Image (cartoon, rainbow, N blue to C red; front, top):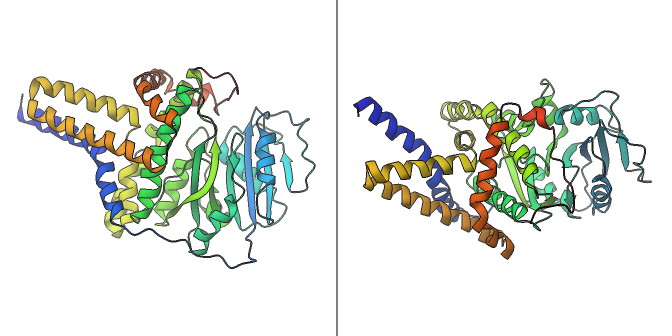
Length: 391
């Protein structure tokens, strides 16, 4: 093999392999960093929140969501439901804290729905939080966000816990979330960088949200990727509120999984280059926040780098057994790191049992690659059919 090809092959393996071992080294650093303590908010002060709930085509999931929000242990908030392309004739909640908005034209965009709500605010809210139409919230959700704003953060990501783990696919989806919540949320934030945004269960000052996305017209999935890039470009940090809990509906069927992952993979290909920009900004500005976050943005979707890494291991069994051994050690470190995340989150036994079916879960994500190019044309949002999951 010519020297140039050898160098290229080694470089490719390094670029893939570091994704396997990075969580291990981040975890080691995390263990030596003292835990940040949230500031105490003054008693009696309740900053004003707009709670934006977006729905597209479906409204059957909204009643339990709104009931959950109306039971918040908080008084100074207003709920805005943006029912895009929905029949709202049966949406009546009998509570003055809820406003149902039906755009006259189809928006088919998260950010368009958010700004439709912002432009129809009943009053000038200080903060907004974004909740999906299938989420439920803990009663102290808003109170758990407040301490981080009190410390000076303008963006906060909460924790999205699984609302359902009754099927193998839902359990595996939950396991994936636990991994990302730990390493891309708690660990990154503890190490002085920012938590990645998860699409819902997140809150911002209204001014920050408007300044980040007000000049953009985004369509398709991935508004959270653009939003986090805009925030990090300003060298602001996104705090991680591990006790601000939102319950999220996990994908329970294979068709949901394929369509959802197709959109997510499409989103990564559209926006991963932001990582290069943030790496450059991190070096120029001497910003660890930007540099580490940029490194994370360049990481391919989990199943892609796992499959490519496995391919490298198998090829090296024939080409270079010593290198294959290094790949084997890297895989062991990754698996150990994955189970550290599950243990940290006190994952249910059914989630551990579901891990035996992980290869099948990966297989369906491979199938989603066929739909990546036109992912946003297949569907705008994941459609949940409760009670019809596959075992």
